[in-house]
Length: 411
Image (cartoon, rainbow, N blue to C red):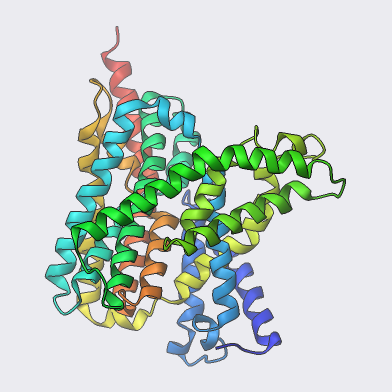
């Protein structure tokens, strides 16, 4: 469903202006701007409840949906660019253990809660809701750690390393659940063990192959492209790699965001060095303005799909609060998986709590697959909102508490 150009442009103008205004409000309150962008969407999407029908099309318009999809691809590409595979390897076993527990426990809790509170939904819906809880927003936690000067602390490195590994594992979980749902839809493999093993293997092979083979191939591509003298080649070629990997992921049955993330992982400074010398700024800085335009559209569009009328049913609020509790408890448990002694396990667990943009991406995929209805989507978005809202002040308190206790106990 599409609408005329005038209505579409007006909607885009409102998306961007309201997203930035409310994002600024939340940043002034010490909270992530993404919360303001989600709230902007909720307000615009629920205007029909107060009799304003002019923007009722924003949740169904195909053009806005396409821009939102491009926004999420750019977002995952940026996350990949900011992720350091070598740093993930250096943080060692603790980060991997924390990430693994941080995926398994929340998924089990979320699936059980969904089964208890949504008995009418399918098993696939229950499992998918559990999968939503596996996500961790590395960006939100990284900002808090940076503000407190704790990025280079042992706890900070474990949190950031585990959050990135968590995203990789979460994408694999998403690929598995998505594959099972689509397989069952066409009368395929259902929940067979062989099907699960195949989807996991396919996901691991894709990500592993992208890192091992994509890097060398991309370096050759950029060396050849260096013969061209046209401006803007670094950005154009990098986005082409991003979209090509996204398309390849879709072609092998994975979510396109897996490909975008993999593309970001392989495009390091060594890869695009033949072109970077002629550019005034690096690739991350060049991608940022595109993300500034497209990514808020994704968050506003996601918020707009939250139907506040569903909260008239007390079960929606109960589901949201139960999922929030599971999200918090599940990530606190993962702090116990730290291997080293004497570290601040409480802060590590708190740092893994925010679901942020990754949780919203999972919810959007669930709606596309048809396993998350309007009521469940509203509950999931509220869970993401609450976990993202709570983490910055609670993590800051926990880290300061640890620092204060250490200074008191030291001679």
